[in-house]
Length: 149
Length: 149
DNA sequence: TCTCTCATGATATTCAGTCTCCAGAACTTA
DNA sequence: TAAGTTCTGGAGACTGAATATCATGAGAGA
Image 1 (cartoon, rainbow over the protein chains, first blue to last red):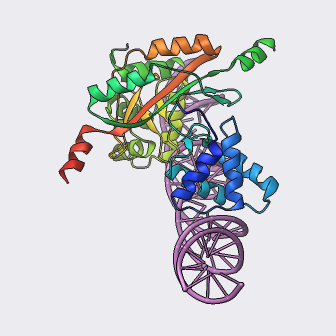
Image 2 (image 1 turned 180 degrees about the horizontal axis):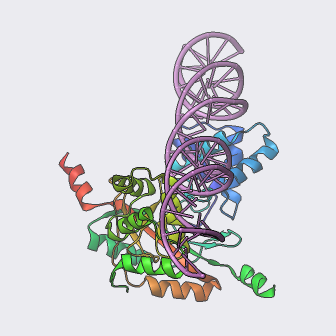
Image 3 (image 1 turned 180 degrees about the vertical axis):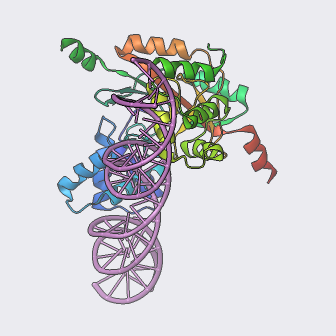
């Protein structure tokens, strides 16, 4: 269980270690990822970076995300109908709770998943690398909003 | 636990009930979905349908899949980098075991997921609708193939 | 058989994400 | 601090899965 000591420092260190260069745009993207509690998409990151660096293009955002993915410093949550979302705070595989109304994504606490994974690896003969566990539902706020109307 | 009595009949009945028409192309798609043990993508379904109905376009496949999704008779497994895959045998949410080498998808047995879901709903206050649980790893065949080389 | 819809097929369109190219910026070494 | 090398950013074209449009054709009840 990582404590989120200083995600930004961790990312910076890892980037330097692996020989990637630091640029202002890149630093801005790292900051956004390290600080955002939500799970922003590439376009949202792009919009945030452009506040300080207006010439930044979406390609730069994707390139930086690709770098971070390659060194395991960001988690990509893929959606086919929707845009992908990114998690820089917890770059390792973990469960998500996704509201189908407001698209909010939060991280629930969930033990017993590790046990389940281990058992499955044994029984199936697979070498398990990672997993994806998403629960789709309606968050308390949206439930209230609906019943109110 | 559904017994897969006759998935084709079940699909046909549901389509009729809900007022959708039957066409030869549609029947062909249903058959493919009801029979295939793998988890085919739209293009694979398309290729299979074209053996008997060469003029069928991919749009028809997608439209039929959309109809089946809307009545809950097919499960769509979304991938953002790859094409989506479809499961007509078990149209309800269930775990998948995905080989990252050969892209094969199988359905592992996994109890304790239901308990986990129920607990999460209670603790989070979410109204849970569905979930997605995918394990990514390397299947026994691919592991053998790799170590052999 | 008629008629009203709905489905099909051909094509265009969308949109997230990727690729290419090259100028310019960042590190390295001296 | 200057030269040389390699990486990065920006612009725009491109890709590929999926969707939309629309004229024509087919299903199914009356």
